[in-house]
Image (cartoon, rainbow, N blue to C red; front, side):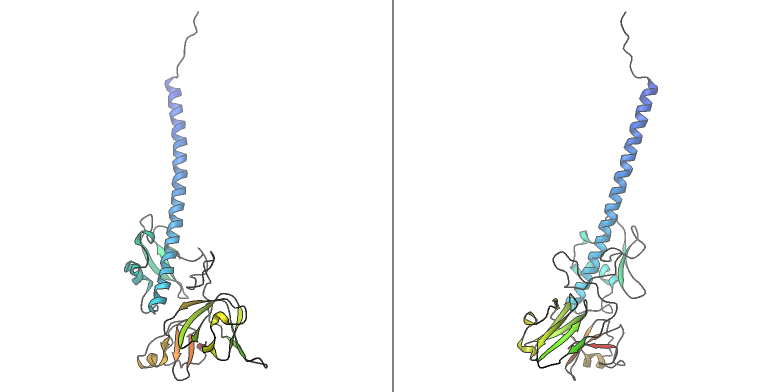
Length: 267
């Protein structure tokens, strides 16, 4: 007697198809979750790129928040500083500008985040100061306040030691040209008495510094004559005293005399 060959029944085929469908559905959900996460990370990186580009553009063009807002920068397609392909949400979200109570700017995406975005690092303290990145280190975040530097010109050694905390900036005149720098590590930086005769590369001490701009500072006489408002961190040159100052807060003007407690001398 021959053994009959038995095939799959209709019920068995349906069960097999259901199992295959469940496995495929789980795989698709997993792939979708991975894709969504990748898009969210890309979106956050793009928002960080916008903030970096804005900071660099303002620095190079000598502009402040009052001159160019973050929203204006977004609306102007980033002033040609970055490709639109690398500064838009991969999920077609809309980018808008916002700021926290301290005035720190950030980019919001209506798809991935109603909360602050574009921070460096994500969820961190905010933007890094231009010119402080090195060897894979993204840079130094700006201080929330501008500490007053201390001066030490003591003893028989004729030097001037200026102590700047990490993240602070200062100007330095070499052969009549004003350069601006950011301090990378906490350290004293010593210079010879004749500052025009030496460069920062020849300075004593272990202070690490980096140049951020060679543009002239805002003149105090122009601030007074034109009733200008100075932003926090903006460098102003007082032609009467021949000194440079950093504004410790936003909104300083002719009614907050140069050299008072609202200013930090950096000359």
